[in-house]
Image (cartoon, rainbow, N blue to C red; front, top):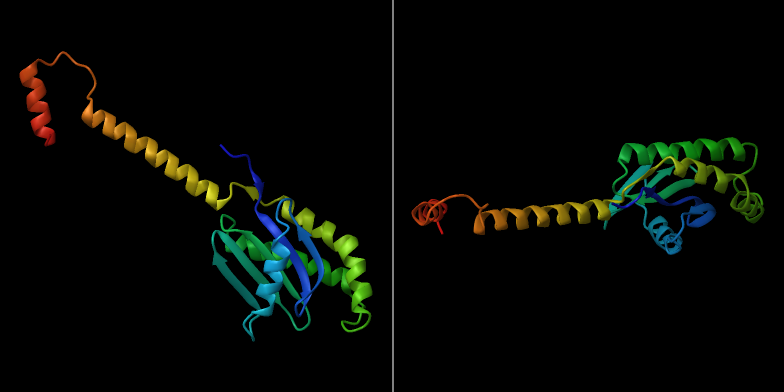
Length: 177
């Protein structure tokens, strides 16, 4: 069985499609490119957004200035996913308070990217561990194949018993063989 891993692959704070701070879990370096593409295609006039494809869920919480987004495994519930984002948003707002959203955006990006916000997102992501959806599906398929094999073997090769030839023929006839 697969050991539990982080179900949060990526989290970010963005202004439009400019990433201000991002957390990328191990082995998911391509998530940044995917997130930027998703941010560019967000529907207007939404405060929350969620889209699931290929066992990955892209979610966003949007306010007037910033977008808080994440790419997570589908095994994580929407409720938990939005809770994760809300915690990130609250932490960002408390760190960001007092800064003008348009002043020195690059300095703000460097400050958050290399410091507190990334660590906060990482801490929030640590509690969401489990078995990814693709692994759950693979394990279910293996279990079903094992059950099918056992059922086939029981059907074709019944357990040895002291049945005589006539009883064996009656058994096969009752099973439709």
